[in-house]
Length: 211
Image 1: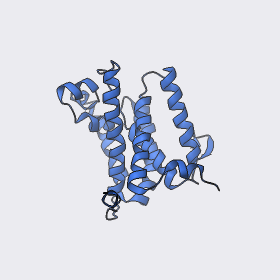
Image 2: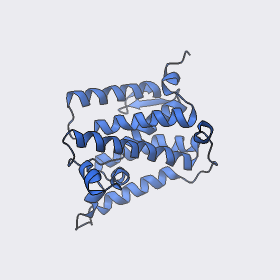
Image 3: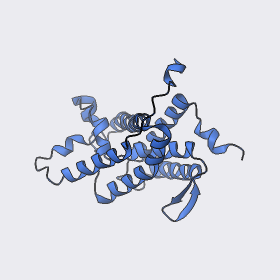
Image 4: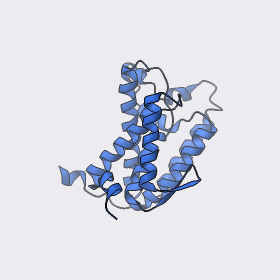
């Protein structure tokens, strides 16, 4: 079983990161010509997923964004981390990783938010998958530097720990309402599981190894 899960895919590179960005941008612009409000069915509503069978939403929510700055920062992060990860993994493996993180984050959001009485609060954005990409990037390129808020240079593993800590604080204190902190954290968790099972890489070991 372990050998099957770690069987490498044939390496190919076809700019999957750029394709994802283009699709996100097209969906974003579609909302402005969508007079019938069909774009709303792409957002993630946990109760609709569980009680109306809208399971497609655990995929489509990743391509819907709330506004310009929401999609801008997500696509910038997707470009920054996705290009290098895709080159390292290969495009097919990269897409598998991306959707595993995003769908896993969506499923976690469905079950937790529904049980918490937030089943009709919509969740949108690629952030769950992108937080997973951040963990993957830091695990494969632990010596890379990231400009935290585009100002403070940090090693990628330290930046992951800072972002994760902030998300936990925001979630527990209920600050920055309207942001899906749970989805972000779930994206990191599913990325961790993927890296351990698929690649045999434990990010914790990578982050805290002796240098």
